Length: 222
Image (cartoon, rainbow, N blue to C red; front, side, top):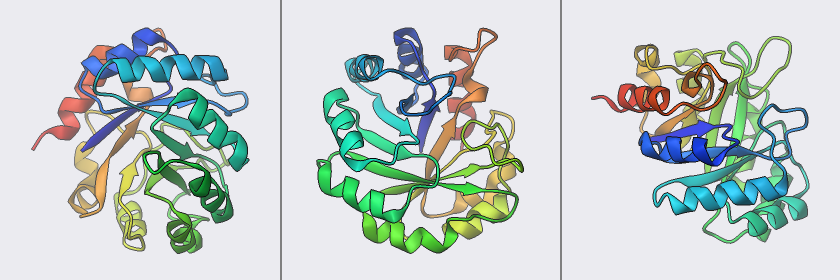
């Protein structure tokens, strides 16, 4: 199971994620107004810090929609994955896949509001365009997406996964104490891991190593 911790902004946080046993660190860039949004220079620096840990893969988390710009950012920073948040179209995935080296994995977020997903009808198109993984995340009733701390409904998430042929990650309000609520997702053959933000943070608002380790232990438990 992959464990991804999202929204690191400092080298210390990146190291804490690695030491806690997680696999992926999410680095925000092109998230206007986002509390963890990084400049291109900071993105490259933290991606380098992730590589230096010897275990972490870096994930560019972005609302960006310009393939050429995103491909250049990926090349300049050396990130390993790109996670497309927001409602980008399959055409962007196709254009981006054509510009990226094969080693860079493309993740498309699917936003679930209640029991519905506005992108559900596009899943096959995303797959044909070159999506490597999906990430299922909650959108709030007022339209907010990304790091909302709102959990998904297990049955809704598992049902959405049935329409995919690609693996998927689960996000949305995941904590060490609510793993038991996602029995259907955990049993799904294409489930590959989790994406956590709020539950990994301490009182300062920064990613905390002990809290991250709690998440890793709880979700990797038999």
